[in-house]
Amino acid sequence: MSINNVGAALYSDAVKVLDSTRKADSTRKGESAAADGGSRDRGDQVTISSRGNDLGRLAELAKAAPEIRSERVAELKSALEDGSLNVDSRELAAKMFKEMSLESWF
Image: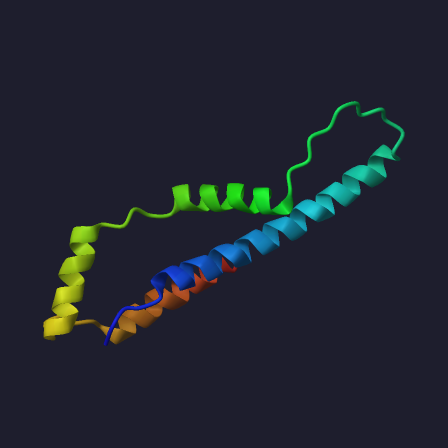
């Protein structure tokens, strides 16, 4: 067994979070514009591109992500490769389902 594409999975999850927050933001902007009626003089404005917003949100997600302990990862990888790593598959599955159900709230 090997551990591959962890970064791709994290990126995929981050993109899903960004998409959902982008949809929520656009809904709020639409409600705000409707409430204004477009009658306010807004003066100077700064607009940040959606890519800029995405980068800002990715930076926030990266700061909130748990720290990767390189020594622990190397230790587990070595144990996995030499066959000394014992994993309780039921416990692992239970934790995965719990994590997936928690993510559905966000």
